Length: 406
Image (tube, rainbow, N blue to C red; front, side, top):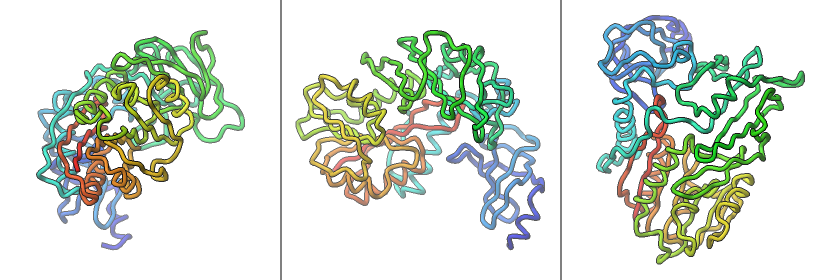
């Protein structure tokens, strides 16, 4: 098919059968020519009429015009802003009881196809409640100076009056604060809001010099502003510029999963614990005993500053460096929590040169998890277990904790 022929099909409406949900949250179907079509806002097993919005030689993308035969798992989205087009919770049309199982199947498919490891057991792990409250959100500024979320697959901002998954301490700010945007601002300004569920502390960081008006006196502001959270009984300092899990419940579940995956390797008997992409020290502070040597490697200066505070009194070294450029040293355990793109070859090479007998990999993308699993296997590690956590209900986002032995 030529590019001209592909372009001519944009706008065409076809009836499609959704075979399954895939990484990224869309449903996968095939058109009459056998070409793969990715369709947004569907559930597995449905028959839909869909309009083609992008057509390439080997795949196409489409949006639902009407649901001809709905799945039993389809529900009315509980948030009216999703109906308005808010792209923050793209799986609200799927029953909460079915979302986690769908994520497990997506991860299982990725490990079978991308990693070529169909025999590895992929199990359903813990999940936060579907009323879990996000303690960190990044929002955009609407044309009338309010805060909102991006429309799905768009830069347009949808005004938000309420949010089902937002912590009430943040929701108060969204409801009351106004935003003044400078004349020299380019594009749509964005703002991060964070609170501590355990402490009630609140912070706001404007990424584009937009000024928030009407903030209560207790709100700290700026990239260097600090709030505190408590996870697994440990008080953690988290700067506004530093990454942290979306909710306290998510952090608790993740710490528990990594603890079980690392069982027997946290005592330092076989060498230090390497906390790769260690952030503010979530795993080192909550899991590694204070007298066991930990080496936290993190590229963000803000996160390293937080880690220094969070690991005060621990036997820990904090190295501000890209993990791929860190000089490896012998270790008894590596815990790696990379960005969404995953480890990649360079980081896997560093891990392999630590000679650690166990690696615990935390991944927030199923395909990246599978790619990294293949690389670790090729580097001499054997996959032990894969646990799928649901830390982001109402969305396609998934957390995967994989264990490897050598």
